Length: 457
Image (cartoon, rainbow, N blue to C red; front, top):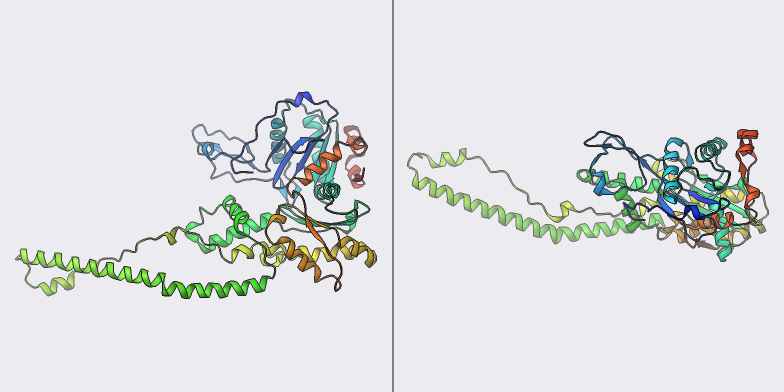
């Protein structure tokens, strides 16, 4: 999705019957909304909110999603930071969440009340208070008749299971915007008691890259924004198969490059600078000689030469002064997914998380071997080059010698969760897994302590 993209408003909202569910993939990075049974979401935008002030009127406006640079020049954004309703993939700021839902339903074509059942995705083991606040917001603000919550990673796994990419028993490794999860599956259902989570994701990779480049080029720190670092991450970063070996190879290449630069580019630059200084000195001496010959007031020319101040040296700027070079940062930043301690987070890496999740299963080795033959990797970070080989290499270190192992990337790691949820909501048995406003008022927050949908319909 390009920067500055603004979705158009749909016009066929009234053409859908009130029993057709609306599917929302409420991701920490992107908000996707559409109709059950369709192959693609109708509306998708970044899950962020910004509230700048108009430069002339001083009025505060609310901007949801990506912004158009041509329009944002009329607003003062210096005191308005970009806000997200999420904290580690859990919705905490429901004020911003209401702005996002307003914009999402408006783009879908809703006018006043929504009046359709809602299926919304969430992270694994979402806290009950977050579910309760979200339900209260949807019921009382938008007039939703019924709601169902489901895990995005599970929907992605079930969708790829239909495509034949993974089996009924397996593992789902999700590398998302703010967290990474490992979810085991037995007989087509997730075992939530054995899932594992670490609070490192794509956001931390981008932020780490931005910090490293700002320290490396302090004069360009203002131009190295988070959005620019995100583009650089998508274009240039990769996961090293062996981090320490890659680091040694890079240092050796960098040393050879420095030696080459000293003998070629630097030598030419020094010779060019020396010739420019000699030419300037000759021109100055010629001007002084002509001036002294024409001016009789000078008595002691040697003394005048000593009193003449030396002109300051002028260093000509080259293209290197305006260029940002990305070297070790290309594979150092994605490495935090496997070594979170590099950014001060004392948690397990995603390869170690697989071993932790398998230990929590309390099953025999034959079941664990069967799970390891169907590992699905999903989430935005799975698109980083080198992710699958590195994961396979890391997981083999925790598995017995010559044990079978198979990893596959999801068909579309970004949209498969929404597609799986849309297929689930289109089923005739979807209504059994929803709860209404009356159910919520009767049971309150206790309703969510035991609420779990059955994904195999």
